[in-house]
Structures are given as structure tokens and as C-alpha cells.
Length: 274
Image (cartoon, rainbow, N blue to C red; front, side, top):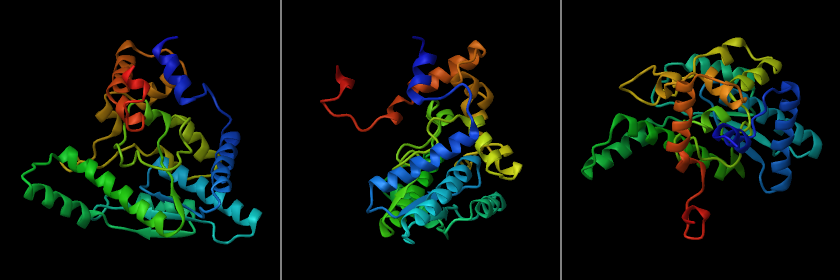
């Protein structure tokens, strides 16, 4: 079995999907998690205005609406959280996403004071923090906020990690990579777009160029530039197609370099040591 085949098997990506079926499959998955954890009543998710959080947010809202209908329990809620660092450049996109998701509850928590406070504390300890590292701190502050809200509302935090991010490790460890449930896991980027299309999302919500927007010294840096490979190539790779040797080498290099992000903390009893 080639490395490509192993990765596809591990991530569970299909070469093609029926988007209507995958929408239904995801909603059922989100509902089953709540049914199996009856003490949980809420889903929480940070909304950026990008494709992934828009998709996960809309599916979560649909799931809790069905839970309320099926159980008669009005406590089931979806809480969408805006988590800007100061003023977000694409706030208009985030508001458009919220209008599409129609969450039960919408909050805004500015992570700038917490992030800047941590930066000051680190500098006071003699630590010079790079702009890239500060971006990771922002991502982790966002997850701290989401878990704080979830903890107050008997909630679980949804992660937006999907196969095209997973294969490249394009997420912050214990930041956006930390979550209780990741409903988009087996989808690549283009498949996520297909789901948004059948859900009736405005095209601008899934045609937007993906940008993490965590680094201040490289504002507007796109995911594809940061990765050195296009999402088209990543999606093709995950669907078992043949891509250029250069693109394949880049993807597989990211897979090896970011392996530590895809497993739980290691103990002496793990296979890692064998």
C-alpha cells in the first residue's frame, strides 16, 4: 500500500460523494453524539466567515433544531462565537456566515486583550515571541474562549478540521485543532463546498480564498501560499488521483512533519516507542 493509499484510508476520504447524503450523515452524527451524552445540551463553534466554520455551524444548527423537535427539550442550543483579534478585516464575511447559519445564540468575544496580556507576560519572562508563534497564541485563546462558554452551557466544542487540513497539519495544536467532535473530518475542501451548495449557501461563502489570518507580518497570506501547494492538488491527492511529483512530495512532507499534531499525548505504553 502506498503512502497516499494509507493516508486516504486513515482520513476516510471518498473519491466522490453524494452531498445530500453527506449532509444527512453529518447531522445524524452530531445528533448521535448528543444522544449518547445526555448531559450535553449545547454545541459551541467559533465562526470566522470562512467555508469550514460556515459549513460546520449550519450543520450544527440543523442538528440541534432536530434534537429539540425529537425530544421536546428546548435546552438544546447552538452557540456561534465571533472571536476577533481587535477588528477583523473580513467581518462582513463573518456576518454573512452568521446570517446563513442562523444560530440560536451569537456571541462576540474579543481575544485581543487576552492575547496581548500573554505576550506581555512572556516578554516579561525574557521570551521573545515570533509573529508566527503569536498567531498560534491567538488560535489557542480562541479555543480557551470556546471551552469557557461550553463549560457554562453543558456544551461540546465543534472543530472544523477536515481532510485537506489534516493531511497537511494546517491547524494549531491545542488551538483550532482542539475540539470534542470534528464532523467534517472525512471531507476534503471541494467536498465541503459541495455540501454548502446543496444547503443553499451564497457562493461567496464557499468561493472565498482560504486565509488563516493569524500572522500580522504577513497579512492576507493565503493557505495555499503558506502550504506551497494548492487545495486542488490536495483534494485530488485525497481522492486517489495522480498529481505532479512536486505537489505530491510537498503534501507528503507536510504529513510527516505534522504527525505529532494528529495523535493524543504519548505515554511509555504507546506503540510509538515500539
